[in-house]
Image (cartoon, rainbow, N blue to C red; front, side, top):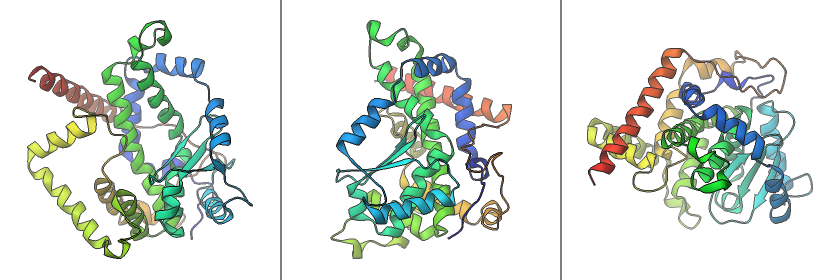
Length: 320
């Protein structure tokens, strides 16, 4: 498997991820929220919880998983090595968080459902979040939503600054960030079908009926999903599902949509160049590059899209 010594996250970061983050940072209230996050957020209780209620992976604890994990850390040139925890939870899920001390949590549902190669794709995906510096903003999004739900003195005046528009921008960025991490998984595994297989199983896989699941049919489903956009009304429905008009805002794009983005990148010149060792490098080997570079026009376009989505939500609420 390839190892990308000194690679910068900017080498594989999806442009929609960059644009959405810049649009988020430019919104009124973001700077204030960021300052309050640093002031009031405490990371240590999360680590204490994980140390007390999960299994920390190491050389003598889930040694096979640890070896796979270390290979991913090496291949993406991440230093220092994040912590890895296994949580007893049948839901096939995983996540990366942490500001000063990033960590990854993998549910036992992932270990039971996926083979070792697919587990590697999941670990590389989560490490992609850490490499791209996503974990701080992900934690801020969770915290901001929690603060927005509170009233009175407990909000320390923060609630007034957490507008629905700001939350929409957080979740819009959160979904786009997944596209960068999917690319990290592809870089580490160097196997598109393997990454797609892990997505398919996490989406609706079954241990009992695994032999009845077809990767090609899942790809066809993705193509059919993309074709739905030919009807403008379907695009409105997709938007409503993502923005939480009919429930909670979604933190991830639909798997069949992520699949298409990744398939497109897998045949791109950019991907081929990275595989050949021609990629942007970090100023310091192993450094996590969180700088954001995007044009003012791209940022303005995305901010306008978010404002239009907000107006559409308000219009539909008034028509109920």
